[in-house]
Length: 472
Image 1: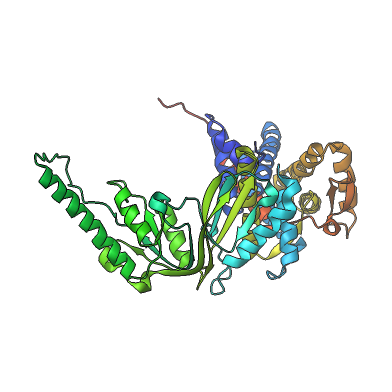
Image 2 (image 1 turned 180 degrees about the vertical axis):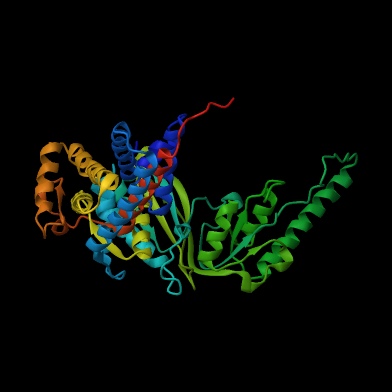
């Protein structure tokens, strides 16, 4: 269940080359801005529709293409002129922008929970040395069923989607933890090739078991000597990372064990906890350990997770525990949260807000219409067509809100024809046209400008295609 444009197009099995370009277009918008993926596809379709009309009237594709590029640059300029500068420390304005992004999603009624989480997460991982850069890989979203979306929380620390090992009564809670992340196995060594050893004598069997035991104990003694009392073990493909015997001795040594840590999580864990991954037991020294006040296994829904809190010198990372009543709801909440995070990231990169509700599109459409009258020849006709195509956004918005689209768009045009009404847009809640700024419907400038540029680029590319040759 989703209404995220990029997700829907991604799941569709598209064969037509031009349709594939639209799928790629939504993906590009998802990468650049993270939001506005539906808008960019709708806009592109509308522009292509106008192009068909122009081509039928005998206008050459190259002329249309060049005029589109001109109109797009002018449109971005107009949007820049409408934009409101933003102070990145203004948490209220950021939450308004995140709420607007969540407003069109299935989980819109929970935006009061998800928007502050998105804002706080991005502000927390922002690096003072590189203020314009936000890497969303530093935000880890964990999905857990059980509970409602209201239970979604941002955890100040680290949450591992793994259980602590209960074998032989090992601890499940450690205070004043010293955390080691190891990439070696605590199990008897295996030969590199498949071979079998035939043991015919009980004494020899005892000797093998004794050797294995001594080998494991020597490793665990070295781990204990480093002061470690929480052990994260990376998943191993070649052989068992731990055996029952090694878990028994680790439990005796009062070490909390979390096994099967995925390879891709290693970097995130190291960055958060401040430990270093250790590939050989000889290299395990106290300075490679991370320190935390508490490591504890907690119940979450029907499952268990390991929470690490009170981390000393914690890296700039955030864990978000996303809850929901079933898998579909959680996945949609995760996607919506990702869109909200992307919106805040856009604002960190380009610190301008514009109003939503179809207002900027109508304003750009009006201004381009005026500007097209100052041009001559075919350019003027193509720019006018571009301006008309932009009205598809307010039209669709009105249609989705159950209003009369023709009436609403006409009324919007009238409002925007008068100067000083640039911020008037569709108020979905009241079903009328109001000043959208007063309703706090705000979106980043980057979402709109990148949607315009990418849609125009895609249209120009399709215009340049003369023919499709089937190739076997």
